[in-house]
Image (tube, rainbow over all chains, first blue to last red; front, side, top):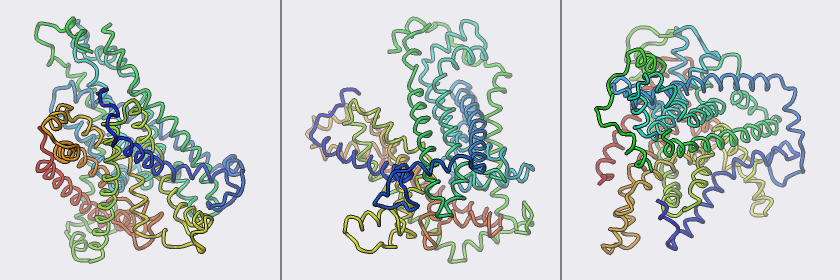
Amino acid sequence: MSARTDTNAGGGWLGLYVLGYLVFLYLPVLLIPLFSFNNSIQAAFPLQGFTLDWYRTLYGNPALSGALANSLIIGVIAALGATLCGITISYMDLYGRSPLAATISAIARLPILIPGVIVGISLLILVNLIGLGPSRISIVLGHMLVALPTTVVVMRSRFAAIPKTIREAALDLGASDWTTFRRVMLPLSAPAVLSAFMLSFLISFDEFIVVFFLAGTEPTLPLYIWSQLRFPRSLPTVMALGTVILTISFIIAGTAEILRHRGLGAARHNPA
Amino acid sequence: MGSSMSSTIVATRPLPENRISPVFRFAMLLPGGLVTFFLILFALGLVVFLAFRGNDGSLLGVGLTAENFLTVATDPLYWTVTLRSLVIAGLVTLATVVTAYPVAYYLAFHAGRRRNLLLFLVTLPFWTSYLLRVFAWKIVLAYNGVLNSAFIESGLWKEPTLAFLNTPAAVVVTLAHAYAPFAILPIYVALDTIPKSLLEAASDLGARPFTSFRRVVLPNSMPGVLAAALVVFVPTVGDYVTPAMVGGPASTMIGTLIQSQFGKANDWPFGAALSVCVMLVILCVVLLGRGADRRFGSRI
C-alpha cells in the first residue's frame, strides 16, 4: 500500500480540490468560535471587536449547569451500556459460532438504516408502555441504541485484528472461555474499548434528534441550546457554549482516534 | 507480520472450537440480546402495531383499522411532502457522493504519508454536534447574517437579501454539509481494497488513465458509492431539525410531519403510520441499491 505515493500530475489538482473541500467542511463550523468572541449580538461582518463577555454569561446559569450535568451523567451511563453491548455482541459474533449471535450483531447495526425520528418515536412509545415515560433513563436507553452501531463496528474490527492463534493458544492451554475473554482478549483490545467508550459518550453528548422525544423535565445540553435558539438575544451565549462543546468534541474524538490504532502492533509482535 | 508468530504457536490437533460453556454463552449474549430484541425489534413492532390502530387519545389507540394508511394514500398533502423529502434527500445524496468521490480517490491513491491525517480531518466533523453544524448555517444564511453582511461589506450588494434562508435550497446545502463526512469513508474503503494488480494490468494492456478509471476503478468502487449513498440518504430523508432551522414552511419534510404527530397534532397512530411508510420507502431504496450493486458493481 505504501507504494501508492503521489506519482502522476493529476494528484496536484486533486490535492487542491481536497484542500477546498476541507475548507468547505470546516469554515461554517469555525464561524461559531469566531463570532463567540465578537462584541455584537449579530453574527455579521464587520467584526465589532474582541470580548469574553459571552463566555462570562455561561457562568452562574443554573439552567445551563443543570443541562450540562444531565448530559454528562447520561453520556457516561449510555456510553458504558453501549460499550458493554458492543464488546459482547461483536465477541460472540466472531467467536460464538451461533446463528443467534450473528442475528443479534446484525440487528445491532440496524439503527443505521432507521432515521433518527423513527428511533425516537419507537422508543417514546416503548418507554410510555413500560411506565418509564420521558425521563433520563429513557434518554440513556435511546442513546445506547444510537451509539450501538459505532461500538459494535469499533470492537468487531479490533477483535478481528487480533490473530486467531492467540485465543486458540489460551484455550488450548486450558483457560476457560471466561478467563480467555477477560485475561487475553479484553486486555489486548483495551485501547479500542476506551475508544468505543469515548466515541459513544460523544454521540450521546451531542445527540439531539432522538433525545428531543425522550426528555422529560430535565433537558440535556443540545436541548438547552435548542430552547435558546428562539431568543435572538441569547445567540452569542449559544455560540460561546457551542465553542466550548466543539472544543471538547475535537479533543475527545482526537484521543479516541489515536487510541483506536494504538497497541495493535504490540498484539502482533509479542506472542507473550 | 503475524506469520512468523503463528508458525510457532499453531497447534496440530483439532482446535477447540465448539466447547463454549452455556453459562458463558448466556452471559455474553444477554446484554446485546436484551437491547436488540427489546429496544430495537420490539419497539419497531410497536410502531407497526400502532399504525393499524385508531386514535382515541390513549397510548396504544383503539380497534384495528387501515384508515391511517388510507389517509396517507389519498391526501395529496402527504404525497407532496413525501415527494419533496425524496427530492431533497436525493439531491443531498447526489451532491454528497459526487463531491466526496474525488476526496476518497485522493485519499486512496495520492495521499501518501498524509493519508492518516487527512482521514482524521475529514471524519472529525462527524463527531461534532449535528445541531451546532446546522446552527452554523443558520447564522451564515440569515438576513442579517454572515453571507449577506460579507457581500455588503465587500461592496458586491447594497441590500441584504432574504433569498438564502427559509428555502428548500438552504435545506439541501445544510444537509449536504452536515452529512458530508458520512460519504467519504465507504468510498475510500472500496477504492483502497481494489487490487493494485488490476490497475497495472489495465495500463499494461494499453488503457489510458481515464479509460482505466472508467472501466476498472469506477465499477469496482460502486459498492462503496452505494453504501455511501445509503448512509447519507437514510438520515436525511427523515430529518426534521434542518427544515425547522433553515427551511421555512416551504420545506416541510416527512420527518417534520411525524414529529408533529407526536407533539402538537397528538395523533400517535397516524404518526406511526407515516413512520411505517418512511421505513417502506427506505426498504425500497435499499432493494434498488442491492439490485444496482448486482448489476453494476460486480466484483472480480
